[in-house]
Length: 108
Image (cartoon, rainbow, N blue to C red; front, side, top):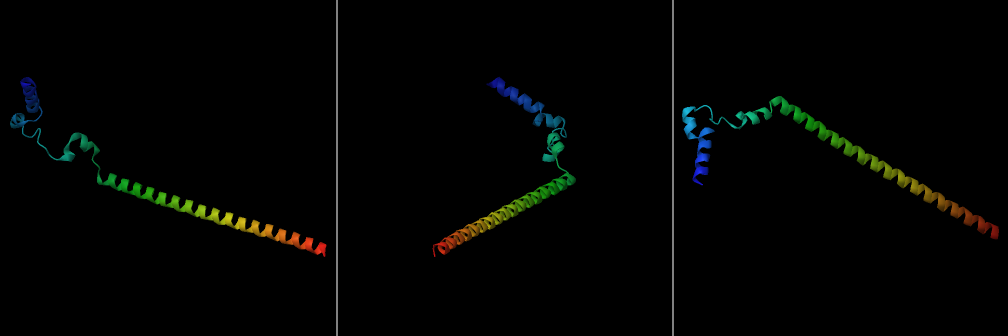
């Protein structure tokens, strides 16, 4: 346990602990989140942010356009089917009326 603790203490001093920072104060000084080498490579510039915003806006507009087109197509299909059903019903009823009228006229 003591040896593990001393190993951790040595590692702490080796990688920027208080002892090594006294020897080289600028080496491990924290300069902010974006100054980290890994995070710095991922940091977004203003141009990249603007490009992402434009792409996101274009994607949002595209989604809205697709939704509107789908809704319009569904409404048109429902209206056309409704009109066809009404026309078929009217034609069938008219044929039944004509056949019944002819039968009645033949019986008289």
